[in-house]
Image (cartoon, rainbow, N blue to C red; front, side):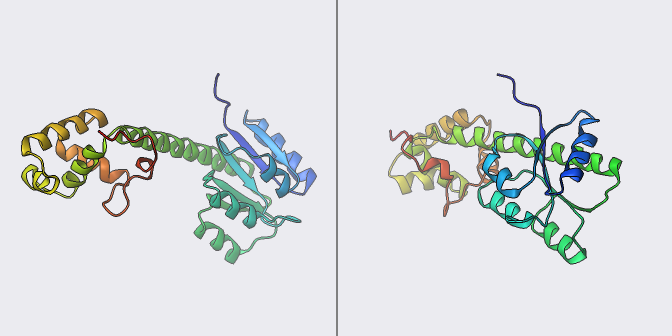
Length: 220
């Protein structure tokens, strides 16, 4: 099934402004979905849908910052553009420091707003691509056996095959075989490449990959 094109979600309790913004974005062939309340958006939103969110900061009921914080708490990193007629410099600074993509005052320049929406969608696309790459790498590490994970820990720590062998009570040649199997499974050609890939994707002795802590580990 073809993935849906990116959607610009718009939340604003000002119905005429909401319709005008929807018309502007549709005029440049952007897919939109509009909401008159934060509660309706939160109830309906599916975090798997790509795009960005244009959000009024002052709304009756669930306000814009409350919606924003809830999305982040739920692990949704959709880029958020605050577009408001109520915000000042301190509010803008707080929103940007909290990680918002942008903070614009109404009425925003139409072309500038369109440009920022396209930039937010591009960021969302990059975020999703990087997340997919990370998850793919994590799945490769997930195929490692418990013994291979122990060898990996030694390799990442900079230990020699002899030192790893002494720690695990096995022969250095056996360590070399395990290391070769690890590199083959995760798709790297050198021990240095293995260390780089592991560290880049969050491995540490104190907190190994969370994806390795489930029942799908091979224990041979």
